[in-house]
Image (tube, rainbow, N blue to C red):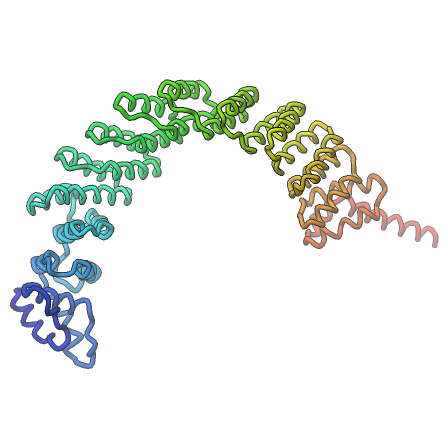
Amino acid sequence: MSLQKVLQNLRTLKRWQIPNPHLHPKAKIADTIINTVLNPLVSVSDPIAPSIPITVLSNLSPSLVHLILSDPHINTPKCLDFFNFLLLNQSLITFKIGVETHLTLVCRLVKERHFEDAEKLLVLVPKIETLRCPFAVVASYFENHNVPSKFASKIFNLLLKALSDNGKFQEALEIFMYMRLNAIEINERTCTVHLIKLLKCGQITLALVFFYQMIESGIQVSVFSLTVMVDGLCKSGEIKKARELVEEMLSKGVKPNIITCNTLVDACAKRWNFDEMNNILALMSREQVDLNADTYNFLVDGFLSSGKIDDAERLILEMYVKGFKVDIHLYNLMIKGYCRLGSMERALSLFRQMVEKDICPNVDTYSVLVKGLCDVGQVNAEKELVDKMVGQGVELDGSMFNTLIACYFKNGMIEEAVIILALMEKRGFVTDMSVYELLIDGLLKLDRSEEAISWLTPLIKRGVSRQKLATIPLVDYLRNSASEKLVHKHNEK
C-alpha cells in the first residue's frame, strides 16, 4: 500500500492518538503509526476504533517499516517495542520481516549502546528461514549501508556470541573466519567466552582448532584464554598436550601464571601422573612461577592418595621453610594417610607436632585417629584420645559415635558399647539398625536378656518393619523362650 493510503486511514485517529508536538515534522507520521499499533483504543464502544490498528498494520510495507525504524527522531525503545510487536503479530501484516529490517534496528541499538537488546535481536537472525549464510547477508548489509567499522565490529562480535550461546559452533567459526579475512576487529573476550562454551559442551577438538585460529589471526591471546584451554584439555585427560600448549605459547610471548600451572599440577595429582608433574614443576622453576599454598595442597593430596607419604611430609616441611601456613586440612590428610597404612606411631607423632605448632585438632582429626587406633586394636590409646578430645571441648559427632561402638564390639567390650550408644541417643543422633542388632546379640551372649529386650524399644519407635524385626536374634530367643515355658507348663499339668 502507498503512504497516501496509510495517511488517509490515520486521519480518523486524531481524536485518539496525538503525536508528540515536539517531534520533527517528518517523524510525526511514524510516531502516530507506532502509537496506534502499540496502544489499543480506549473507546471500544465506537465500532470504528477496534479496526483501526488492524487497518494500519495491513497497510504497512517493508520500506515503511524501515523508514520508521531508522528515523533518528523516534525514541529507540519505542522503535524496539514496535518491532517486537510486529514479530509477534506476523499474521496481521502482509509481508515477512526480513534480515535487513533486523539489522537496521540492530545497528541503531549498537550505536546507542543498547548491546543486550541488540544481541537478543541477533539471536533471531540465523533462525530466519530465507537466511542460508548469516555472515554473507550481514556483510552485504554493512557494505550497502556504509556502516562504520567500529559498529560493524561490535555487531559481528555480538553475532559470534549469539551463535555460540545457541550451540551453532560451525556458524560461529564461519563468522570468525569472515571477520579475520575482512580485517574486522575481533574481540578477544568474545573469543574466550566462545572457547568456554565449546569446552562446556565437550567440543575439545573444535575448541583447540578455534584457539589456534585466534593465534593465527593476530589476536593478543591473554593468559586467561590460555588457562581456559589448558583447563579443558586437563579435564579431558590431555595433560601432556596441555603442558605442550603452554610451552608453545611461551614462544609467542604468553607466560603462564600460577593459576595456569596449578591447573596442570592439580590434574597430574588427581591422576597420579608424577612424570608429567615433574615436567610441569620444572617448567614453573624455569619460568620463575613460584609455588603457592594451593600448589602445595594439590601436591600433598596427590602424594598422599597414591601412598607416597614421605614425599607429602617432605613438602609440608618445605612449606614451613618457605613461610607458608600449613592448615589443619593438610595435617588431617597426612594423619589419614599414615592411619591407612597402619603407621599409628607416625600418625600420633604428627598429631603431637601440630599441637606443638598451635594448630588445634578438629573433630575430623580425632575421627581419623580414633578409627586408626580402633583398626589396629589399640583400644586403651583410643580411650585416652577420646577423653582428651572431650576435655578440649570437641563434641563427638555421629560418625565418631559409630566408630567407637564398632570398635568396642570388635574387641568384645559390650559394656562400653552400651554406654556409648545410650549417650549417642541422648544427644539425638540416630545410628544404623545394624548397631542395635550387634548390641542385642552381644547382650544375649552375656545372658543379659532383659537388657537386650529393652533395646527393642528404640527400634520399634523408629518404625522398623516386622520383617526386619524377625531377622534380629532376640526375636528367635523370645520365641524359643516362650515355647520352653509352654512345654514346662504342659509337663506340670
